[in-house]
Length: 419
Image 1 (tube, rainbow, N blue to C red):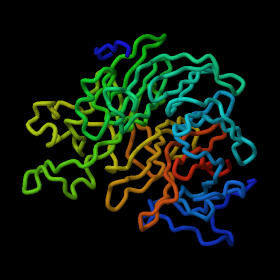
Image 2 (cartoon, one colour):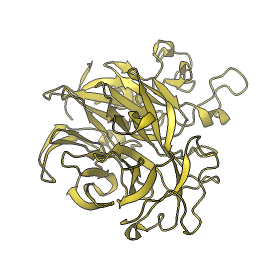
Image 3 (cartoon, rainbow, N blue to C red):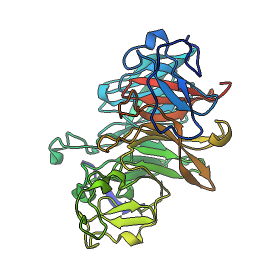
């Protein structure tokens, strides 16, 4: 393992209403305000389960949603300089290339035989790919990736001897700022595995490789699972964080220290602007409405970390939402969605009732992000069953949003009016 510096530095027609088709599945019982139901257009060649029956989604008025490609296990995505969409498929060790072909994406394989490739980013013609155990660069030309170079190695994953095969958050994400600095995430081993903070390299962190290369340096700590990692229009780096599960009630009273219904809405998930040395608390401090509160299971007396000293995170939203892919839009979408962040919300696995999957939008306001808005909903019915789970949403060169879904094995095209 390398030495790590501990210093911080259709063919289908897009439709907006049912057109004599079988009755679509019902959207969530609590439709977000301002959205309208549309039937998801599915070309005949893409009508495999769960898209073999009609479904409705909730989108802004006049927008449409269609299945654009079928990619089993589709995760994060990035647009290449040649106008094709690259999508990571960790389960198969592949990165696939989707070439626009009419109203569909034609699929080919760019890279294979990788170790759980997840995060993707471009800096000109340089492609960055985050595997579970290393960060690579490739020269991307003519639709092919070549000249592999490893820029960070020895990252922890399920094969790390000290972890004994147990690693809940092995997938890594990567982002590149305009100055060429590279940022990547290392998730925590488990829910409240405090030993991660003293590991080498430290887990539950964001690391930074300086412009021009060099050894990765710890940039932000206490980041339980910062799967969402992206660069904002002003060059700042942001993360969307999956927070802990089974948190005990910290409020004085008979339920103090017990796991009760309090866990349904605590701790919230969050978006944070990363700065050198920023501490995001995990597992000793949990974000709350007005700041951080002590975790009574790991930091009951405050001796591990003084939570009152941590600046509040920039934006919080529903606990157990499971935020994944994060990207920014800067003028490519119309009206109220022209500037802000797009976030794939996977939905809860352990909440009652389940937190619904969606594509969220957070408006960009004076250098920070505003509150969560639903851009695409309806993936979950009133009884909690689901037909899709978004992972990431990225704006394409045609001004539409492309959404990956690892549950349905699909990439959707979300089109504003006229696009």
